[in-house]
Length: 247
Image 1 (cartoon, rainbow, N blue to C red):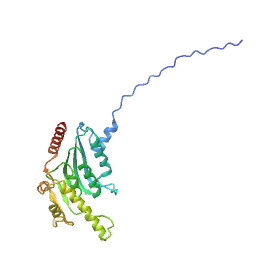
Image 2 (cartoon, rainbow, N blue to C red):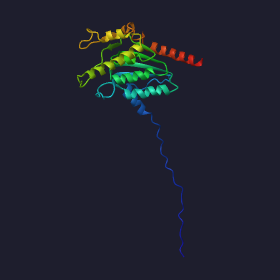
Image 3 (tube, rainbow, N blue to C red):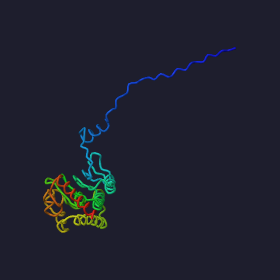
Image 4 (cartoon, one colour):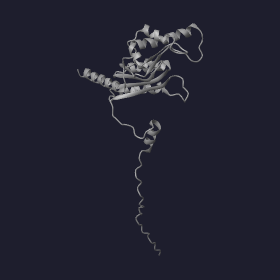
């Protein structure tokens, strides 16, 4: 007869390990330091969306990596989101651009113009070349006293075939820009063409440089002011729109 001993089962011992304290969100802190140069950024739930257009507007061609650029394929989805988001009631466009791709600039300007929400533009530093089109695309435009705007004819880069069709295409593109600017500002087409083809101001080109209030005097920009005035005016447009909807 065989006797088998049952092995008694003992409950498994729990190994107590010291709990690790929760770590601070280092990734967000490092990202703020890398992107903005500071540890903490002011947080505010705002009904105004600020869109910055800086450097050179990049269109169909990729610019060198050392260039500061605004890519139109990044800006267009932002504008679509502004239109669709019910929490955003107004758009503030901050401009400091040297210009860039004409078709990309016109595409962004057309989207800003056709937004159903109040839009205010503010030129800081510079709003040159196709940046002029963006500056006048909103419901009301501002320029700081030290900001400049350069108005000049459209240039083509790369291979240009010297045939009448090329110059006709260039002339039509230039007309598109002029018509958009004159429709969205107080400047006349004759005055704008006069500034565009002026000689003597630019060393190696034709055109005109407008500084601050000069852009207001010719009717290109509505008002010379800064950020505080631009936001206050946008708030008034938002309240006016709310009042109109409630009637």
